[in-house]
Every structure is written in C-alpha cells, then in structure tokens.
Amino acid sequence: MLPLCGCIIGVLLAQLLLWIDRTAHIKTLMHYSSGTATGVLAAIIGAMVALLGFVVTIGVLGIQQATATLSPRFMRLWYRDRLQKVVLVTFAGTFTYSFALLRRIDTNFVPDLGVTIAEIAIAVSFILLLVYLNRFTHALRPVVVAEMVEQAGERVFDQWQQILARQRVNPITLPADSTPPPPHRCSSSRPARFGRFTSAAW
Image 1: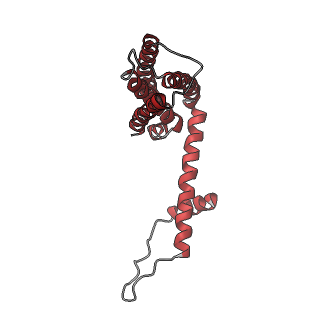
Image 2: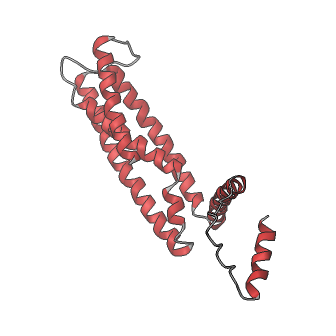
Image 3: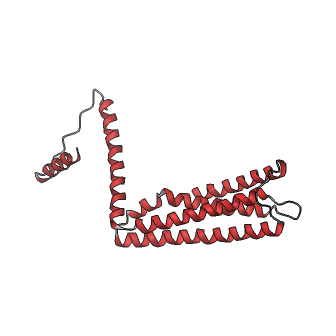
C-alpha cells in the first residue's frame, strides 16, 4: 500500500513542478538540453527499477534465512520495519516522478527544476540504500532479533496494562438477575506457575 502511495505522490509532485517550470520560470544552477534531460531521466528510471528489484530480493532472502534459522515470527517484525517502507516509497516515488517528467520533455520545453529535483531524489535514494544495507546486515544477528522480539513484547505488555487499568476504572457490572460464572478450577501445579509468572511480571 505504501509503495502505491509513493507512486501517486511522485506523479503529483511531477505535475506540480511542471506547472512551476511553465509559469514561474525559476532559474536553476544547471540547465539541460532536451537530449541531456531525456538521458538523465531515462538513467534514473532504469536505476530505480533495478534498485526496487534489489531491495525486494534482499527482503525475500532475508525473510527466508531468518525464518529458517531464527523464528517464523521474525517475518512479522521484518515487514513492519519502517526503514524498509521508507526505502520502497522513495524508490517508487522517484520512478514515477522521473517517468512523468520524461513524458513532457520536448525540443521547446525542458523542466530544469524538475530534472534537478530528480537528481536530488536519486542521490537521496542511494543514501537510503546504503543505510538499508547496513541495517539489513545487522538485523539478522540473533542478538538484534532477540532485542526486536523483546521490544515487541514490551509494547504488547504495555497495551495489556492500559486495558487492565481501564477495566479497573470502569468495572463491568452484571445485571441483577444474572448469576456469576462458576470459579475455574485448575490443577495444583498450575496456580504455582501462574503465581511465579505474575510476581515476575509485576
């Protein structure tokens, strides 16, 4: 869903910069001919397609390795990684942005501002790729995976604490004609285990 949003944002940003180039005539440090701008944008489009395939391949291989050696629950944590989502959104947005600009270049009009922004976007994309690769190589270590699982468990535990606190403030009242459920009976070994768990948790 997020890469699709990045594609839509890229198209809208390209249309906005095309309108600015046609109306405001903002001067930029770099001026392009139609052939140079077409070549630059075509190279950016090809690079973005290759980088998107590279990131998807890394993600699939990383998930396969992690689920085979560590835990299948790591898949859910990996899909929720914010850096991976930012990288995919940036790559998809840069691709559609460059493609939308490429369609409007002709011999009479070259969007210098738009092509300059495309070059900045490809530079940002490469920086994000380096950060993503560094994050990827460290995220598959068992210590890092254990830390991620611990943080996820702490968030779930905090959510349950908030739910229990709200139930204490607003207790559930039964109707007057209703009878409470019978108490649950458990074996002699389970209460001791549950007591040790609650004492350790609280």
